[in-house]
Length: 267
Ligand code: SAM
Image 1 (spheres, protein in one colour):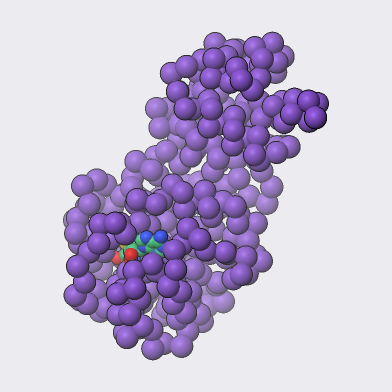
Image 2 (cartoon, rainbow, N blue to C red):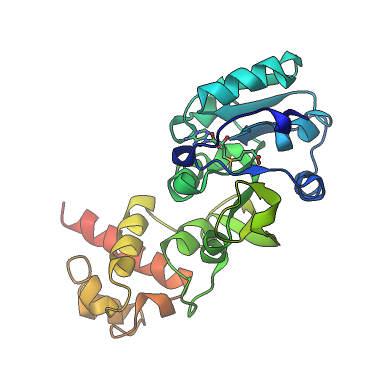
């Protein structure tokens, strides 16, 4: 197996390689690749997941930033014509170049870039059928959190408004080499055909959610005062003294729609 390739793990690329065959099999079974699927794997590393996915599909694209790993992959499973290796930064990936719809994105993601990468991929949600990622468990908890939990925040809201999210299972540090210090988890993210609530402007939602959670202990009257007045907040049936962590996603959408309308009115 290509996992035996000698490579000094690079911390800056978040390299923790999977070596437990049962875990690798379980992840690939959950991806459940079908022959015609258009799958892109982010961060194939030494190919632990790649090899098994490749057995089940007609073609597979992988995106790897580390030149040395690209070279060893090219020399091992890269000879398989159905594998296309892209040596690039996943954060700069233009997914619309791959397909206009039904892309499946998978990977044991480099933890140091997981949040920006999720936001980057969200920009391409209309091209994506589903995503299955391994992330730090703490990040998966934030993605799936409901109002009132301490993990609930920007990541929960921005993903759940556009996607169904599901935490599948936990993976212990011993499944990796080198072992990370924390537990990991698998999350499935499935973009919805349209946002869960009627949203007039994505940028306004981004601003409102960011500002509301910058100081999460503040009341929204204070954290949003530059954007929406207390009386406007009240008009939407939202208590101005509430904290962001207690608001439902639908409340954030109403606040964002209000802020967007105020911006239009002021033009
Ligand atoms: N898939 C392999 C496995 O499960 O053993 C490796 C997973 S390792 C956690 C993350 C992989 O992502 C590494 O191969 C790393 O070099 C790669 N990577 C890190 N940053 C990246 C980036 N910005 N774009 C593409 N790949 C990246």
